[in-house]
Structures are given as structure tokens and as C-alpha cells.
Image (cartoon, rainbow, N blue to C red):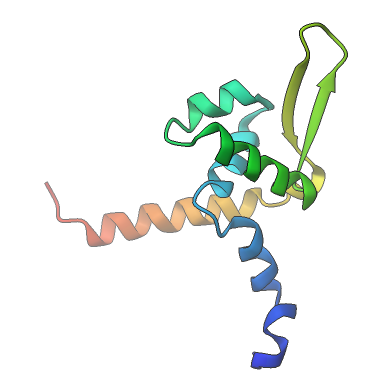
Amino acid sequence: MANDNFNECPVTYTLDIINSRWRIFIINALLHDKQRNSELLKLLPNISQKVLTENLRFLEEKKIIRRVVYPVMPPKVEYELTELGESIRPLINQIYEWGTKYKSETQPEQ
């Protein structure tokens, strides 16, 4: 990979989406089911509302998730993966499997 093509590299595009402390965890939570804002805050207890909102907006802008607003009072909003977002499932599964293998091979036995 030449340096002048770095920004065009597919790995760069992928890392732009998941290269954040929280985005991959948000995506992972949404792989299981639609989530409301309050549910995401419970699933990610160390994230602030501000950071969650910023990351949700980023993922929505990148067409990884969609924000679904229901016409009820009080307003109900859920987040779900788009078809494009759903396509990241195999990558998340591979990261999980690799991490499990790495941990078992590098952690001392107890």
C-alpha cells in the first residue's frame, strides 16, 4: 500500500467507522436488537450522554445505523443497524474470536 493511496485504502474506511472507544460497542449492542438511548446508556455504563449522542450521530451520518422516531407522546426513538451496518457482523465476530484466542494464549493459567 503506497502512502499516496492511504486515504483510499478500504482498511482506512473501516477504521474510520470503528476506530473509537465506543463505536464498536454501540454497533455490537445493536447487532443484538434495536435499542433506545436509555438502553444504550445501561449497556455502556461508562459512556456519557454527550459522547453517546456524538457517536450515534456519526454512525447515522455514515449510514451504519438509523434513528427511528415513533409518532407517540412522549416521543419514542430507537436506533437500529442499517443493512450496511448489519454487514459488519462477521467482522465483529472475528474480532471476538481473535480476542478470545489471544487472551487464552497470553493469559497465565489460574
